[in-house]
Length: 368
Image (tube, rainbow, N blue to C red; front, side):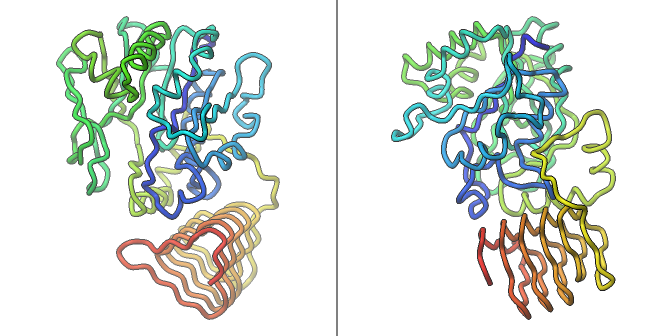
């Protein structure tokens, strides 16, 4: 599918994860032991043979630039096409919306040989078959195809999702912005397939009318004028909108069926390669129902936990129901339970840390 341009839109990210997004954008938050959230969208693009990908960033993008680099791990370091990371053109001014970013880079859209554009956020955990979505879009001769899923996540306190109504013929009939969806409601995944010429027309028209939100001003405002079809995604998806949902989404990956569906079935999920030794387990270690990444040293007890690369858990330490990110260290005789420790956290000897209903988050590089 060389005539496809993939866009990863980080402009509209919200600080759902609070402490975890203080120094990074949402798309670069670590996930499942060795990945970042953006890895899933990028890997889905690669499976669909989308070899030209532009990442529109907004703020806190240093981490995402470091992670993606030249795009080598996703086979995007190529002479033609490849990976483009696009920071704000005017970093000293507040971004008005994603249409502002698209308009600032309108020349890229004009120059690309792609005839179809796929737009997606960078924080969806799911395996969307874009080959199938693009084929439906082309066969239906739709102007725009939107992807939705029936909501099956945890209850949402803040109105942050967008729901939609679908006609019997598969067309989009209405969009309700900023809702708290109930189980089974159709949630828009803010993922679209659109013909390039139409996209350029919509960007220009909205920008000149001082309209800057692509979903609201380009799609919802044109439902009656354009042929907008809907594609229902039925696969597993983690709805991440809070610290609690982030925690539970990670813990889902302790389920062998979930792991198999992501990392053994259909296509691979790629990430930045770290050349580290396999995890080391001493005779004092005891590990059950956990993900342990490479480069770790385990001398204590680990239960129902996700341990990222290069973590050291010392003798006598107990880690339960927790997420310990890269290069952390749990010293001797420490007990931690129901916590999320960001990168390079060190918990000193004899400490006890137990989270309540909400997992306790320890900020990056803290020493406790």
